[in-house]
Image 1 (cartoon, one colour):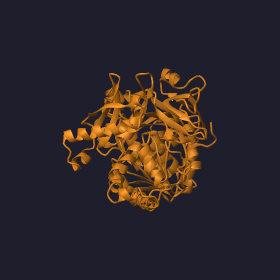
Image 2 (spheres, rainbow, N blue to C red):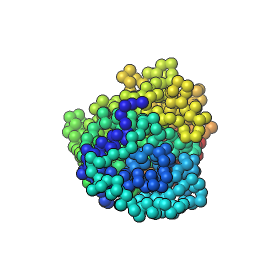
Image 3 (cartoon, rainbow, N blue to C red):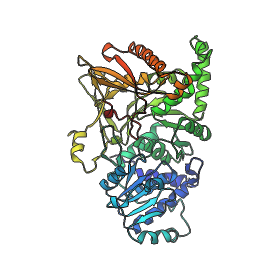
Image 4 (cartoon, rainbow, N blue to C red):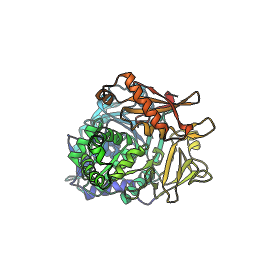
Length: 549
């Protein structure tokens, strides 16, 4: 266990930044650290008066918002266990998670609550609306009585009002459970990942020591907070420093994200490859492919001047005030990463998994290597399960402070994931170079076998296909021993080029021939097949591959 304490981080941040802005909803209201503190204390009173004990489970579902953040903080600083649920889950899945976690309170957005059935959630005692934090349902009269007298109870607890000096939350050991995270995987319903306070504290500690933020800096939160990546680095870490976090509160399209970046001018940007790739294809490619720019970029010295101009335009699109952009959640296209590095754009790719809360590897943009996802973080050991880790691909294993306590009420799955020596088996495949940089080659469950037993990582092929103008997304599958690329067309581009279906198929055939020049013969794509509907995805935007094999 590390000596740094998660709850202490938050208590200190509130005390030291009491009158500063803390949490805002985009185009909505703002809470100062003082107001966040008052709301935390109010919920502590509600929990105590209604019989909620330390260790009890509290479920939370809704889009990113300031209220979402307040509920999360109030729960873990009380010593209860938060159960964040992705808002994209179906009602039956929400019922399952609430029941499996034995949650006693549910905080839910109204539009989600309207689709749920209270009779299908057995242990639930109370329900609050996430929009106004007021009760929606209670199995007894106690809750309404407490809420009605809340201001009086707060005054009794803090005579004369809550001040920074008076603010204090119960001590919570790093050994205690902080969160149970249920995330949907690509092969069915996921397990509940048990994250101790120690795991989250280790993530926050590393970020504070290695990522470029300080008190008062601004952050835009648009990654789903119910997912470990967005939670840790768009919320818990910046809040611990006293930053001002603005929650997007709506679906993060490239247009909305770009507008928010330009208005808020965040100091650090977290993203997933899908967003970066869309911005690249929609905003950047159309500019650099136009004459005469496309010609001038090929001329030495002149292209250096043009790269500076392109860099200025791209940076302004991200707000112009950021230190770096950190990409995680999946691999970034090598072509796109190469372009950003060529123009001097400060981008880096990290690696994590929910079971590590989530961070496994990171390197600052100034040190990052193209194609790598960084070096192992300070409190983790990472190794490759192969005879020659620098050259022979093997499973990535990790052990240390970040690693989960196991899967909730599922010892069999825990034993399968964590071996007797404490190594967590990631299911990811990769190598580690002589400098400790990790290079991911794919998921072990996604790996395909060539006709002579060669390992084929479909993600490598898809990454190149997805950069083609007429392609929205792709999926490489193996049928009858041959590789087939399923292609979802980019309808906007197809329309702008006035392509018929026959013309589109000719374009894809051209792509296929060009693609196969970049790979060995055993990785050749034999056919590109149109797939008119977007692929089914998990809330993390991973394609559910098992549906298309």
